[in-house]
Image 1 (cartoon, rainbow, N blue to C red):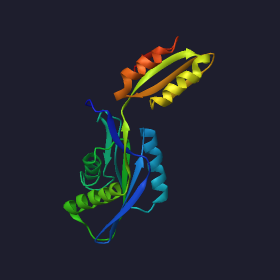
Image 2: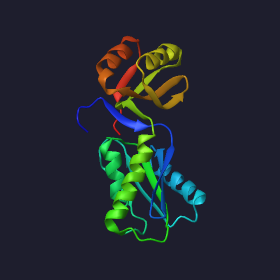
Image 3: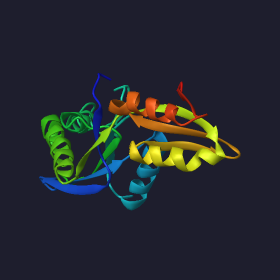
Image 4: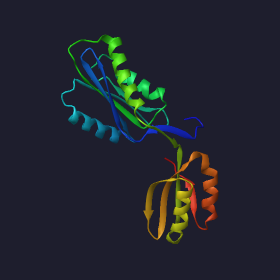
Length: 203
């Protein structure tokens, strides 16, 4: 990822429908954080639309541009998954899954027709999905004494950090995501609290 401080994603699911010569293409958008999330969404949609002829999809997860997958689910190669991913990428989104289910209407659409249908269905669904901007975060580990909990948690909130893991005993261990643009400020402020140790977490 470049030096960007933000990324774009979605926080809620939506759907939209596109029809062409009797075939119905219903596109669904889902926020996903992991491949596990993706599998759950796919299971749900296959249960919801068991009679659909195809369940094609594309997802992109994470900020390194390497975690993505496309599926044509039996449609001619390159006619479904890639056009769906193209729509995700045109909006520069990540942590998102778009599934397009097709109900065949009896008329073959041909390769250009299929590409257009999957692309259009995905585009329509993305048009009605609110897009949110989120800060890119870097994971840091905090270690501190239980008595400093309030001070530490106030700072976590003030700096808009995300708590990723916590282990609260007499000696506390916290993994937080610090917005990229506020790392220097956060390190300085946490170090101001006596006895707090902060270090970047190696993922």
